[in-house]
Image 1 (cartoon, one colour):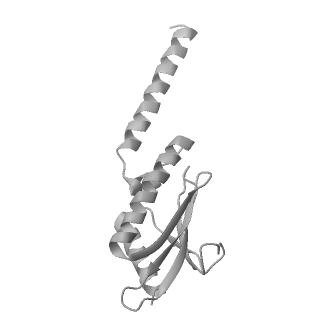
Image 2 (cartoon, rainbow, N blue to C red):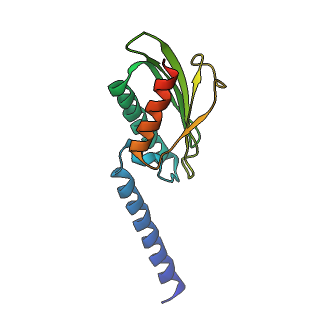
Image 3 (spheres, rainbow, N blue to C red):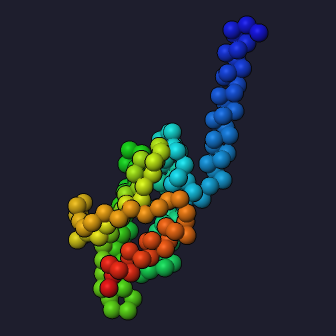
Length: 147
């Protein structure tokens, strides 16, 4: 095999790799995509779009969601949302950030005064390893802060 044939073989394998990666990513839901190591802006944009719909829908299903605003940044997602306690009407605003979608993702959340407060309260890091654990940790944090 000469060098040209080797280069052609490498190009074909690279194309297969790209297609395989796209196929795997397309099978994932919004939550699973958060743990995927993104390598392109296109991958992140699709994840952001799915996350925004999925996370907002999750919040609406389990809490009284008043406001939700997310931002697609350079390989991370962040935003704010406001929840209301259905029993007593207390409201709480939260800031969240999902750090570096290229690897080592963390879901950080904290209470804040409003949608312009980027410093807020204490940072809490939720696991992205298991969706049930994320839901449990998020619920615990929200219930404690929404008294």
